[in-house]
Image (cartoon, rainbow, N blue to C red; front, side, top):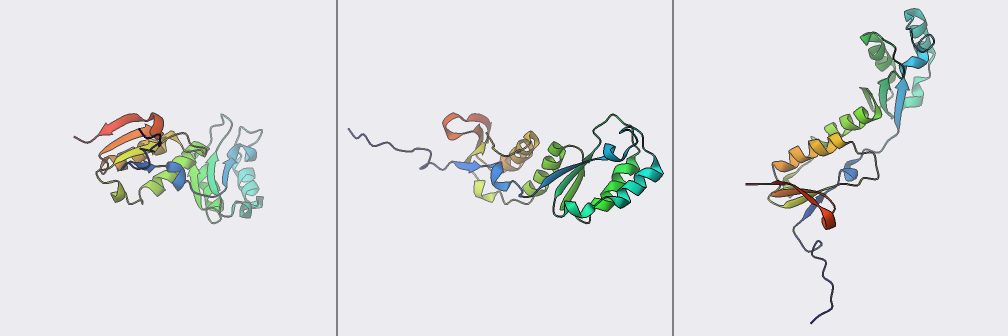
Length: 168
């Protein structure tokens, strides 16, 4: 009897789909509109426009930017659109919302461009436990793409994967 340890995972047809491998490198920045509101609550159009003109937008060069308002202020729709007109020429991507909304949009763009054919009729593990801020929505998007190709899909790690899908 041999005492040799065999790594069955390494020798299997199992493919690992790790969303961290697709994590876009770049600085994430959140712009809070409330910084340009009177007492963080009231938009005075003339003051708002003047503050935007004076702001150094070049500091967002190549950033991924989310625009939001940290206060409960009711701001007109044009306010975030106006901020976008200033930052868009410097930023790589601009979204309205939170950091999670930003990450979701980045993954939406990325996942739609991947060639999933290498997963055709193979068992796939959708790797969990990210060290990077991969939003849960990215997993939801990824499984939809993988389902059209994979024979089966599990979530987690090879040693403790949870079955999610099996082709009939």
